[in-house]
Length: 173
Image 1: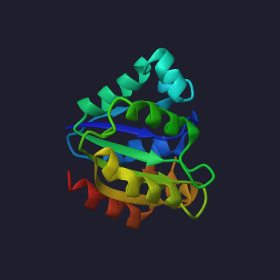
Image 2: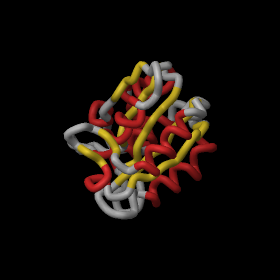
Image 3: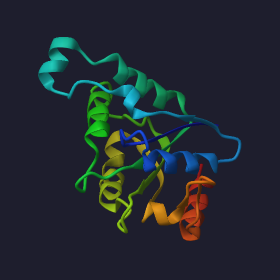
Image 4: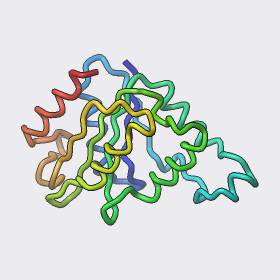
């Protein structure tokens, strides 16, 4: 199974990228492709830019990466209660190719933050809008207080309820 995984933050040390990669590695016999959304940085979306220059190749590359995967594991970073600007821009450009960005793929949505909320606001928003973008959400799980619940030396989540929810979601693949 080809699994595309990424965090929605453009931080070089993204805790959401770490979490997404950890989760994808829990899938048996998975060929995991970890991408960095920094590799898809484009000008801020605007209708005028699209009319003048068309849709950037990087948006097509991201759309094609989703299309070539069997499933997607993504973890949402939360900035001021919403999507990061880096992810939102990538998503906006990609949705101009096809509103069904996720192409009916099974999607495991995660989120985490250093604080106790675990970025639940953005995860709830992403899950609520998923049907409009053809995401078959198999699970939406938040990990609160990342630094208290993730062992960086071993690269493992130490929160057992999270791990149990994760394995239950993965079994839906």
